[in-house]
Amino acid sequence: MINKGDGSIFSLLFFLKNRTVPFILFFSFFLPVLARAEVNASFWQTKKSPHFIVYYQEASGDFVGQLAASAENYYNSIVDELGFRRMDFWSWDDRAKVYLFNNGADYLNETRGLAWSGAQVSVKLRTIKTFIGQPSFFDSILPHELTHIIFREFVGSRTKLPLWLDEGVACSQEKSSLVSRMDSARAQAKQDAHLKFDKLFEIYDSTLIAPNVFYSESASIIVFLLKKYDREFFLDFSRKLRDGIQWKSALLSTYHFSNFEEMESAWKAFMLNQP
Image (tube, rainbow, N blue to C red; front, side):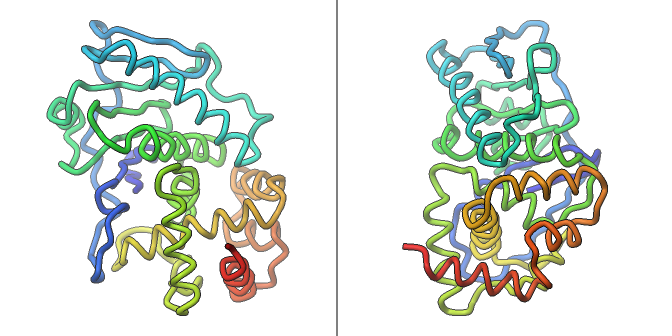
């Protein structure tokens, strides 16, 4: 989920994104920014890799090493999947920073975030704040948040985009939940119970949504664009966003859809033909 109070803060709503909600839930996606952008790292230990600096306090060396290695692996897989490999992100002096707090209480005390928040991210500062002890950290939280930063750094942190696009890109790179998201979206498509694109594409700020429907469908649309078409199409689409072309025009012109009804039909056919 995105918080654009400074145009750059992302807050992962991991609890709501990964539970089935049987009723329509009112949820505000744009919250006031309460977290400080940086922390005082003077007394923190550091672990450096080519694209990241991990700041930590009492975490074991094994955990920190796994974090740095996983971040590098996800960095490579995300830029490959999105077609951004030729771009020069975060090398050495421009490395992203990961602040790893000892526990959820310390993390919340620093970020002033909400109790169910698993991480906060600043695109502008290439900073992730998170904490030890989250069961889905390595296979869901980490790739999700890294994707938010990589995608937004490429297209622009202040570029106005609908929520399905920001969240769909991030959810498409999660390792532990993507299969279940695709299964859910496929079932919705078969029953014609999915959100129609003309409604889904107008969600920007606060709205009435069923999270299990919204996030599954959003992720499946990005998977459709990445798998059905060459990744060069997604790179071209992202370049148009970066260059200031309005996202609807950029999407239709890149993928040669006459309108979003045609795109929805192509997505639905793709989903129903998946094993």
